[in-house]
Image 1 (tube, rainbow, N blue to C red):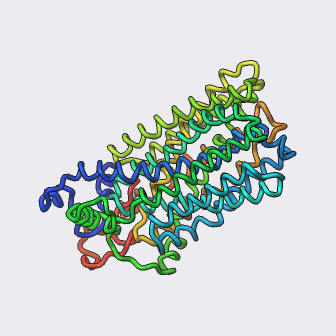
Image 2 (cartoon, rainbow, N blue to C red; image 1 turned 90 degrees about the vertical axis):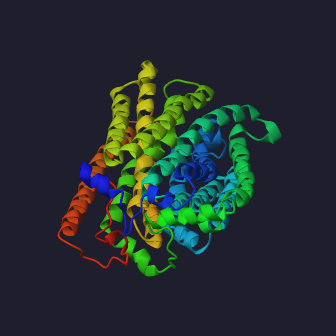
Image 3 (tube, rainbow, N blue to C red; image 1 turned 30 degrees about the horizontal axis):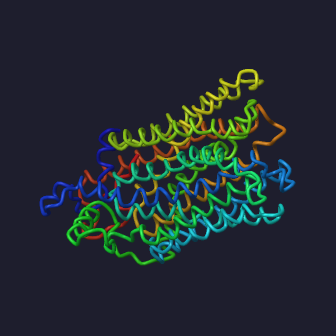
Length: 484
């Protein structure tokens, strides 16, 4: 396996190492990467933090009177969560096609602005029907961000560098959970201001922050490397050469529906989707119901808001740490499996408590395991297509497919944590546990397929040249090696 993995970081013909590229330039790769990280990652990270905050703050709003004021039953609340993900899933692939036909500097801030306005409108919803409509369109607009950013980063970084960056970008989701609890606790004291209940101010304030940041994003989101004004001309040339030596990011690939079809016909692209599908259910059930789960243990609403912060803080630390280790050893699948098993321990703890209110500390401990395992597993899984799919349009489509297929799990998850099931929530916890174990199986299968294909290509290449060295055939090329 080690020999296969070592070669899997080499991806296309005429490969040059960074040292080879540096030999023809005065620019140091490490210094340039730090410059790119400082410019790109905080910019897209803050957009995703706001995205996750605006989709999951409904869990905090529920504790501050949302369902009471809108005369919403438990099942109707779950329906509002489901509508978000229906909109999210329906529009992800079209949105990534739109990104390919526009530019990140225009597309990413624009969709952020639109969902920020919609998120604000949740705070002034006067009836159930209006809230349902707003939740659907919030999901539809947010669906363009994550797959778009994953594709965007693939146009800046080499394959082996993308996983760490995608993981850091996704870690903003766990920060959103932590900030969401703190903000909800503070905003809850605004109850009565302007005649509005606290839950309305949660949506209004956080939505307006998104609007303001989106307007600034037109200035701080950079386009692709050849148009980035924060780079010198020699730095642009250096990035072009190192990416040309590693992947297809420098190709001037026009949009074609045939390249979209190539992703749809590739079984591996569907497996990437299933990997995320088996994680999205536990991910979103945790983020959408953690405040409710903690409150059901016997804590007050205000304390439950604050108690959501430590599990998310642990998730952030583990996500970043595991991403660093995984990048250094060039292995992904074992870390995904081990993280899923770590989260599974948490749900076993939660399910073991027949009456969580008698010993709430044990159940609360289970949420640490759940969050600490789910977020690192998701972060690594989401970077896989960006590393393993070659062809810009095919990769953009594969990224969107992964999120769309994956979030079907979230659609299911939104119906599992019913009010009458508390405080044990056996149905929801059992589904989350089952999905995490299924994830271990799917990741293991994909790992086996990719490693076997790498070995097959090694064998074919060892028998002599088999392809035109001047033409590249994407990830179907026998010289391509998949990252496992």
